[in-house]
Image (tube, rainbow, N blue to C red; front, side):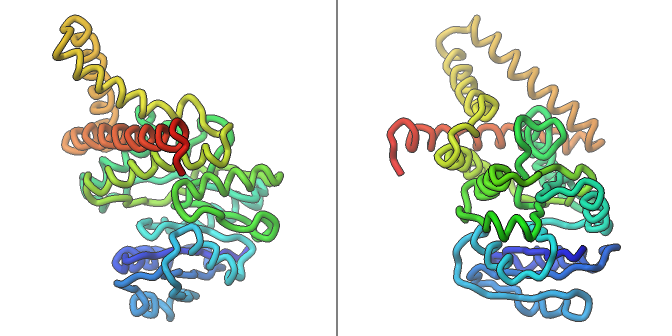
Length: 322
């Protein structure tokens, strides 16, 4: 099996340097790498060229269109039997392709996704953000794991599709705002088999500050409404959880000013929720500092996602704005 690894890139030369370095250590070596520079001002052409002697790597520069259409650009030029998509802020374990190859030969998936995790070299903030995005107490509980709700939807930071999928279904029709979920829904509707490869994890750095993390999760909340506009049946009750959290938080603050008995109950359950997150994060990361930061990251994740979800729910569903 020959893999084509496709990486869209936008103004992140340092990230692609770190990612390509991890790909030089792959134990399975039947692969090529296509780096698609999406109209960057700060390009990585020289960095990618420095790996020419260690990787079968190709560099392309195109006008800015967003990550979805940049992946399509790579699909059109890929030689592989299977296309593997990574975000530029990922680090890839050395046995990743070997794990995927072995799993696909045994299970014959047409498309797959894998989980993400925090690397030992990540900063405490990055580890806290990683916890928030994978925790069972946040939306991480319904993403990228065996106990997902409904049809599994691979996420584009760690996703693969067969050449047959590309030839029949085509590529992304959205370039951002939930483009990976929309794509996986169409793959499923065309009769292809999609599955999770639990051991095919990547180390996903995501954002390096809470401010960046807030912006990203606000965008994710809006993306869920964008998916609903294309596939109304894909909006489940569980997707409202962050919005309910934001509404509950607002009511709790209001009760603290107007009705203390109810405020005491709300404050108790809110405190209990964050205590559970603290001790679970402490158990996962073995660090009190990261546990405290994980509480902050989880709060940001739920509020940012919830506010983005509420914003576009009213704008695009209630008021019918485009």
